[in-house]
Image (cartoon, rainbow, N blue to C red; front, side, top):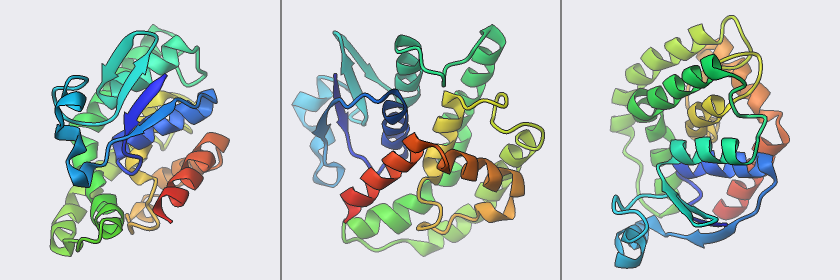
Length: 209
């Protein structure tokens, strides 16, 4: 298995989390985004969109992080997979919501306060002020969903939780206001207690150091 990735992005974090849960260590191919390596012809031959991550596994080449999550959960019989058809539909709903709504509302915090400083670039704090109200709008949706169960689709963790939580990996460092939403905050703490979350966070800390 080969994984073409740049660890700090939320889409890369998703895949790192499930690989840690599966205890699979693929051969990592670092695609340095700030050097434009994602636009080189050899990478575009894998993913014409020029985005990471890309997974190669047993002849399968996959891009789009949520599709990679779904593939790994199913192919490797992960406990993070949906347990029946109804749950599978719910998982797909939250994966789509993450990609279409939540990512834009939450990803900017870590981008500006973690990734850009790591690259030696200045954070655009004005854009984060504008993002704050959008984040709170969608965080309220999450908080409501988590008011009656421990995780997004049931009382068990699924790839829906991984996908949605990926933008919050650096919530402390990026000062993402999750503590204003008690159910969301408690959900995130439950995820932080998982060994595979802790392993991924340690790997990211090592990458940043």
